[in-house]
Image 1 (tube, one colour):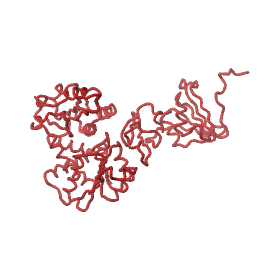
Image 2 (cartoon, rainbow over the protein chains, first blue to last red):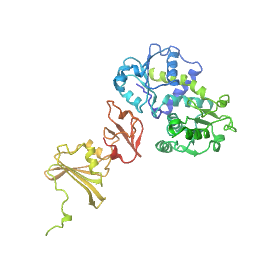
Image 3 (cartoon, rainbow over the protein chains, first blue to last red):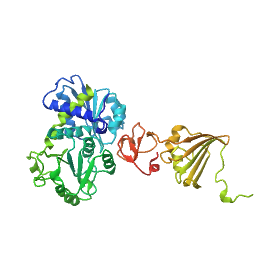
Image 4 (cartoon, rainbow over the protein chains, first blue to last red):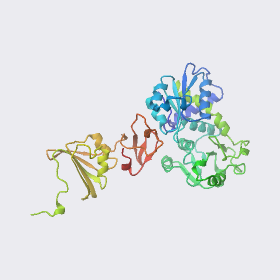
Amino acid sequence: MRHIISINEVSIEEIDDILDRASAIDQGAFDPDALNGKILANLFFEPSTRTQMSFVSAMLRLGGKVINLGSVEASSIVKGETLADTIRVASGYADAIVLRHPKEGAARLASEFSSVPVINAGDGAGQHPSQTLLDLFTIRQSMPLEGINVGFLGDLRYGRTAHSLATALSRYGVSIHTITPPGLELPPSLTHDLLDTGTKIVVYEHLEDIITDLDVLYVTRIQRERFPDPGAYASVALGYRVTPETLAGVSDRFILMHPLPRVDEIDPAVDAMPCAKYFEQARNGVPVRMAMLQKVLL
Amino acid sequence: MKRKPEEGLLISPIRNGTVIDHIDAGEGLSVLRILGITGRTSESLSVATNVASHQMGKKDIVKIENRELLKEEVDRISLIAPNASINIIREYLVKEKIGVEIPSEVFGVIRCPNPGCISNANEPIQSSFACQKRGYRCRYCDTMITRDIASYII
């Protein structure tokens, strides 16, 4: 039985296999009845728009069916049921479980109590491997992953998507360039892990110092709640906003990514530029999750 | 010839039980905590802290009467006292010497410092840490403990 809990446990061969499958699916090469007769349990203990909808879409496109936890308020969780018990029960109703939960490590726990495969769809500030795979897929649509220059802009301290992507990219020999406000740098433990793999990390204060050398810029949202007052947030956020002017002189293959939702960090005027890939990135969630579902269910 | 008072035995020998020697100075009480030994358990205990040591400068010693530590308990001690030596005593003689080995994983011994970790929620699981080069990594949330591990002992 194959669970997908953390991108760290997915080998580079498996990553390439999932991305190859997703690529074929994206071009229409898939059996629409591949998962006929299979049921997916979507257990979302936290609100989610893109992840939840794209897993449902992926399952339906492969001929499977989806059951939902429904609202947490109306479930036995409010009666104090443990996640372990919820998982034991749900794994009797479905052939696979997709779990989003506010506690870090929740998906690991679920994998210990489930009798069916578990896919982690985000656990607190922890792992979100399907997002990482679709991020890799989006980059690979434009260029090979090996040896590229990837910039990470914004909140790298708490941004789980950036952490997972940086970890996955470290296996492809990329150079990582970080541009963050003070206090929102990569956590030291992750920096150590990346350096241990031989990954080059360069820290910048301003985007203009590196933008023309980047192949990819991955922007993450700077959250208001990290700042003592709205004024402090606004002054920092404005300094890290991507506009058509900031992107002047980028390379031909440069792409701009964002896991969404965005707030102020990318000017809507950038949306029409050919390098803006964030909506395509969101759309890529479906073929990548189709490939993941096939991997664990077939 | 009379001994000078400072040369006398700080704590007396035990007949049967375990002597844990060469504990890093100041960690003796943490060793007891890691073994689940409190003032309310039945063992007779002697603890000496900051004792002069040729090898270590200063060290702690713990003697536990009528209890022989298991290998698994000994390995837990390695979390805070990697240099400790364990002597099993029978009829006042050292019958066995056990060195501590750092285990690859520890279960239910240390608490994850991350309040958002599922291992700190009301779930039927034990904490679980992998021992790595830089410290201990929570198997659930990947949080690393790199220092002051004694303060995370459950």
